[in-house]
Length: 70
Image: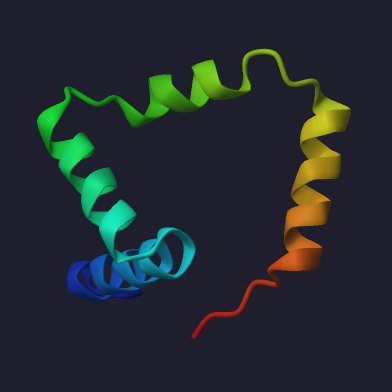
């Protein structure tokens, strides 16, 4: 299992690769500044998405960005 530092480092790297440095800083500052409930955010984000649509989006995402552990 990865240490907390390793998880944080990999997470920041993913954010920087996906958002760029400036938007990563914005994202982190929003999380710190706002009272943020990740679980509630995910529920609201996917409220209107059906199972089939979610499955198809997950498959497409996986095909575009295959999972690798390192």
